[in-house]
Amino acid sequence: MSFPDIYRVVTGHDEQGNAIILENGPLNTVMDLEAVPGTRFHEVWNTSETPAHITYTQEDPTLGPVVLPPMQSGTRIRFVDVPPDTEEFLTQGKDKMKAMFSTVGDEGASTVKEDSPHPLMHRTESVDYGIVIEGELTLIVDKDEAILKPGSVVVQRGTNHAWANRSGKMCRVLFILVGGQYDECLAESLSQ
Image 1 (cartoon, helix red, strand yellow):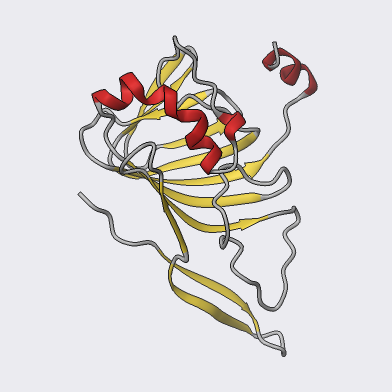
Image 2 (cartoon, one colour):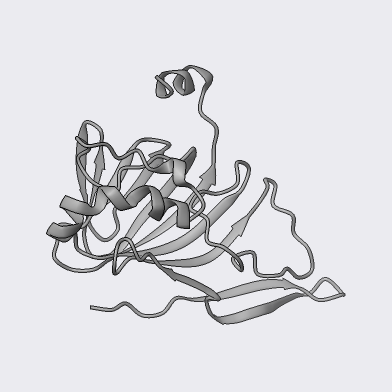
């Protein structure tokens, strides 16, 4: 099963301050993750600061290398297509995860260990809103799991987690990531 392409409309202003459409078409940055065949990132937009700097026009901030987390004071929005887990990935995937996360600019995000519940275990210092658009996904955290179906929304608050697709069909999820910072006490306990 393949999903339709993602299209975006980006607005801006002309020199008189009137609202205009700057872009109306397919995304400029779509990336397949080789370490997890079938996984595709669709980069929609990102900001590097809050409040976001709004100008008349803006170059596409998704051009350049794909980076997993947002800037500490920024945001990132992307769709992710998640393929069904394969037996090969579940048994051999953990050895590829540091390199895979490195390809998306965050090698340190991988937290997978020999006894991890899933090879994709990772953590980012961000608040991520994950909205299942189509298909089914299982959110795995250190001590629990939740099955997600279309319309399910996850508020992922800097926790160690993985996304497992046990459904046998592709899943599309929309992620909106907001840069965050761990509370001092929490950061201390995570470093132990």
